[in-house]
Image (cartoon, rainbow, N blue to C red; front, side):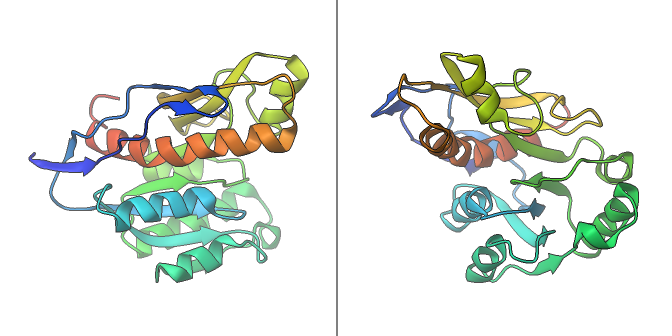
Length: 226
């Protein structure tokens, strides 16, 4: 395994304090020579999707995004996928009678596009056993807190309300219990005295964009160890 999957020399200093990332960013994560076939699921603006796509385009992540699935017809992520000439499929959750039926359709689309690993990059729907039956421990999520703290929605608001001094983001494998799968990578972000929801969210998002491509590389290369 001689090909480097991802290279990232981001340093962990910001203008707003020191950011700790664990495991350390690496330029020597190895993988098979064949690109990992990814399917990405997103609901919003698509900044994490764009971070993954950019890492692939820059030769830092040895992967190919086969399809983007989005559930919100107005989601800006569709435009970002089109910029990279990545196929997009709208699966509007409002048109399905249950979460299980929604996930059956999602799995069918992912399989049709030859997806091996699934990345939830701001996917705002609860996962069911249907998706996990289809992909097992090959589903990755990014969450804006240092799990296991502040699971679920409004994670950044929860951190501010709790008046913690440090929060951050976590890339993890998806399990049936929300935000409870095995942790792959985390970045700790200081909470400043004058932070608002917007300012803290912006700083956490910077770290999400750094660790998500790296976490994909780690998980896809070391899935037998996770």
